[in-house]
Length: 208
Image 1 (cartoon, rainbow, N blue to C red):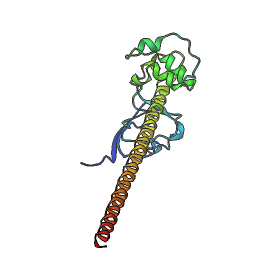
Image 2: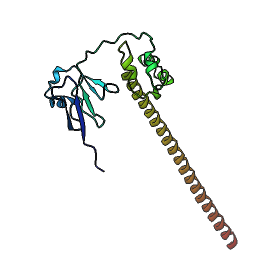
Image 3: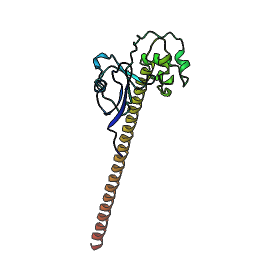
Image 4: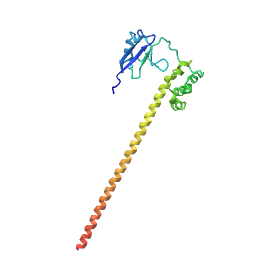
């Protein structure tokens, strides 16, 4: 097989002077792609990686693209400030997995990852439908994306700890088995030596 070193990226949106498709090496800074459209990166406050629904906003244009970067969207849409949740339930109605996004984001904001997992964080498909309908402009999907990443990191650390424990126990078992084998060999040598001494003593007694 051939390793993936390049990515076709669509550069689109009203804020790009010359929207286009480009083939860019993985790791290319976003600012270089913006410049390829004859657009000054400093004129943009942010761009969206991905589509308008499931994409996520980035403001650090020095970040490089990855193998999953398929689109940069620059829209002339004013970003409305976030306001407190009004408990309208629109996000829950829009959720295709029938979750309670307002409950999950409240848990994540309170650093209660376990509660967010209990509310169904692991079932979230990150479709961002909740973002689209939230009247308070809360970046729900961004919270869930970070929460799911933390959840995966926790699972990975737990697995690493479990593997380390298994290796430790296997090492102890191996050392115990080796110690038992060495003890058995010492006992066998001791018994053999005692048997030889007994035979030698009997031989002397018979001669005398």
